[in-house]
Length: 419
Image (cartoon, helix red, strand yellow):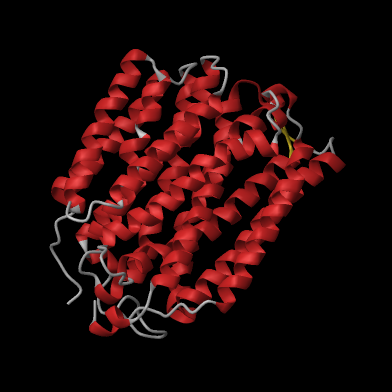
């Protein structure tokens, strides 16, 4: 951090990016919470493959991360941080438009279906998957900006992992209220079997208007670039970003982190439905609420190194998940959110340590790992169908926690720097 960077007032941009982190969290979780309702509304004709098709909603969202991560890095070099944010928000509006279109098309053309042998899926479901992919792409680019900016922007009295924890707290507020936004506002508290696709249109149109207003505010906001965190347009970097082993292993660690975070956040409601819980959305809310509490606590941990934070949380999450499997108890899984809360900030901070001008490129590469949120929940859904239940599928979470523990203890050691 240069003296000039320390003298620049980043409080306004910091607050703005924290709010955008809220938007990313809200839309990510709202998207996953459509699995249960759309499973009932769209997937009556898929027979024994309902869980697999339902998890395609999450798969489509996180599939965007490895594709759009590089786009975000390139745009930062070309357009700067603010220009990249504005472009990402316009992409988000487009994706929300696809969500709106999926509902409108299904209402207007109820007989437009796609057949896979005996499986029948409404065409509108695939429009929704496209919207999930596009909004996921926008969220990817936003995070390519948010993560390095929060890490590098100097705000007096804070350290990088702490600023990421504050941003993560806002993200968790969004993830906590999203399940009840879907069940309570979008679907009006109806039972799953009474849900109608037509109820999607008004909420998604409203979200498009809100994001457009955010773009208008962002146009007027001063958001200076941060010296030494990105390559300038046309500048050739001497080293491959993959030559930094602590970054490469960090990408793998974030693959497992996002994968297991979304496995629980997206699929715990399906697990609860299987066990005939009266309010499946409550478990998801408790899980994301635990992440909110953990991040609020994490935002005050000025003196605890990110490596220590990651070791403590991965061990705790592993023990709690093992207990949940042994006792077949979804309530214990909801408690894992408390320990998942600060893993993202810890892994990102360790991954970009001492990368200098490679930081913004590394942030784009880092997003490749987020595809774990697409792959692991889908694999888990396939396991759940194969085993006729969700209980034993949670061993996927155990494996992911153990790799993150390895990264904290061994893989995150810096062996090569940008200098």
